[in-house]
Image 1 (cartoon, rainbow, N blue to C red):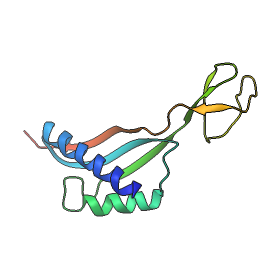
Image 2: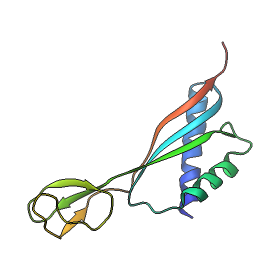
Image 3: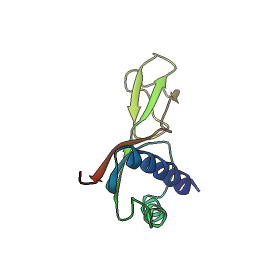
Length: 117
């Protein structure tokens, strides 16, 4: 279900942006996704391809960058990034750190083919 929700959200933003910039079509979509989000990359690409069919984004290339997970050490107060959810603090090696993000979704950029003036 996560892939469908993500794709629907992205396509809504694509439609709004395409209208605002008088785009003829969308050639590429570049996303950044928080490292705590769990989804299947192959399925995400498939769902995007299917959902974009018949829209301005049909045939657009989707690229996804997974962002590191931000943590906060409850012992020394250090903030750091990691690639997994449970990891010790790199400063004090304390095991009790908390995740303070990692659920974000950002559209980094859209490659737009504009309507010729």
